[in-house]
Length: 112
Image (cartoon, rainbow, N blue to C red; front, side, top):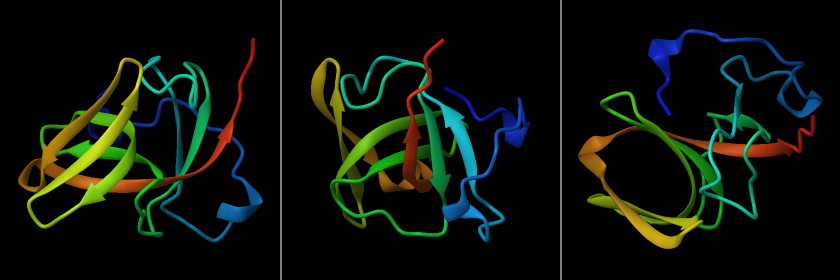
């Protein structure tokens, strides 16, 4: 996934819990890498103001513009370790490569 330099693709209604968070945004899950927890097509609401904790689902934006949706396991000054569910594995990102880590606060299961 790439963030396309902040270009907005579409708009969705803001959840009440994010009404005062001007920097809140939503993204669609565009892979099956987090199934069965998050499924392709799910709408994820993100609050970039609240710092994530271990066990939280997060959007990780890298310096090169790539972005990942994973479960944070641990973060140190040197790196961040996340969990991927499908296929099951742990991934490690060097801290110097991470631009932002934002907390997923709600998931809407979109079915068409």
